[in-house]
Each structure stands twice: as C-alpha cells, then as structure tokens.
Length: 308
Image (tube, rainbow, N blue to C red; front, side, top):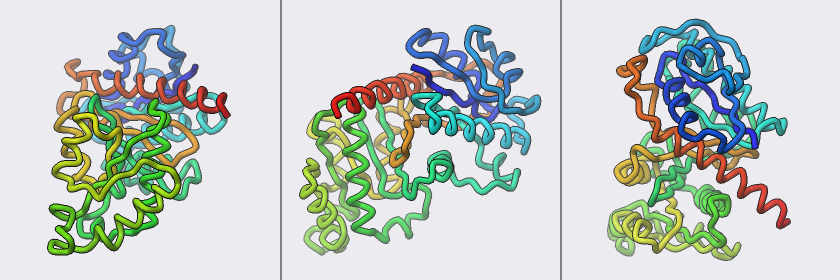
C-alpha cells in the first residue's frame, strides 16, 4: 500500500518530522515523499525512500518566503493528484505556512479547503482524532459570530460525515454525540433556541437515516462522556468548541483528517514551528500518528469495499 507524504513548508519542521517518523515506522507501508528532493535528502531522508519531485529551491530554516510557500503547495497538488489517479491509497500532509502561501498570491484558507477544491468536493469537514477523542466540526475557519448562524442541513451532513469517518476508523456502528451551541443546551430556550430550531431537527434527520446520533448534548459534558466511552465521535458546532478539548487531551498525538473528499487525507495537527526549524529538536509524535491513521483508514476502506 503506497502512502504519499507531502514535505510541507521546506523552511519549517515538516522535512525533519517526516524523516524521524518514517525511521520509526519502517515498512508499515510503501512510503513516497512528495516535494523537493534536495530538501528531503538534506533533512536525512534515506535513499531507499523515493521522492516525487515537484520543484522548489533551497530554503532557510525558519525564514518565511514565497518560494517555500509555492513549493509546499506544489507538493499538495501532486499528492492529491496521485490519490485521485489511484497512484496512492492516501496522503499525509506536513504543515504549511499560510502567510508564505498568501505571499504567492494563491487563495488559501487551509489544507482541507484547498484539497477539497482540487477534488471538486462541494463540502468538507475537519476531524481531529486523538487517542481518546474524535471530533468533527460543523464549521472551522470562520468567525465565532458567523459560526453561530447554524444551518440544519449542514449539521445533518456533518453528522453523516462523522458516521462515515467512524466506519473508516473501525467502528461498526459509530455512536455520535452532537454538541449543543448554548450553555446547558439552551435550557429549554432560556439561553437560546438554536438547539430546538436547528440542531435537534438535524439529529432527527440523521436518526431517520439509521445513524446513532444523540443530543443536543451540552458541550461541557459531551466530551467527558466521549472520553469515558459513551460515544465514539463528537460533532462540535464550531472550531474552538472541538479544538480545545481535543488538543488538551492529545496535543502530541492529535491528527487532522479531511472528510467529505473522495480520497483519504490525514495531517499533523501542528504548524511549521519556524522557531525550532533546523534545530533538530522537533517531535515526530503527531506525524507518526498521522501516518499510522492513514494506513489504518486506507486498509479499512479496502475492507469495506470488499464487503460491498
């Protein structure tokens, strides 16, 4: 099984954590790194691991540049194409720097949205998966004010995306907690009526489709119950509602998974860390987890396809 791994921003810690992670995982899959070969070999990538060359230039560790941003995007485009063409079973992305990419003039709000556009997907979602918690977000990179403008259809589709992801993660019938937006789930309208107007109808739609969705569950208890085993996944209404507990409980092992795409894509859940780039001290924990999860999801997808 071939897994494509993008190098990320060459001035960040991506190349370093890739090399460290692959050294630990060995032959768990057929790895192919996508990016600028001189950068990856300089980082210590063994000659036995091939590199799909996508161009680039020498990068100075920790220094932001348009050239580095352009090289990072080229790797993402190629790895996505490899997955769409069936040349790779999944892709794993090292971190990119949004400011570096913005300086190239390319429109870019995040990996998930960019890859979704390359795949022609109309909608996409972010799943954060750690050891004890798996969270899918209704909205991510928008203001909190906009995130509170809920849409029943979007919530219902998010629950469906969480269910489909749960199947790929190995759950036969994923149990999903759907978070409330307001404190105490609105307290029957005392603190807001979004639960009754938008969230509960979405849960009914999912339940009618045979999905094991519960809620609206007050957010201050939903994550506790999930960690204790009552739920397999949690649907959060907005970015920080899901990110804070996920990162608190599994910062070093959290993996970002893109949902709603025709391909499997996982990623580290940290940035380019320019402050430590080139110093050899970056920890590969999140990259190891992202690589392992990509292999696991790709194998599970094959299993489900064989079942029909």
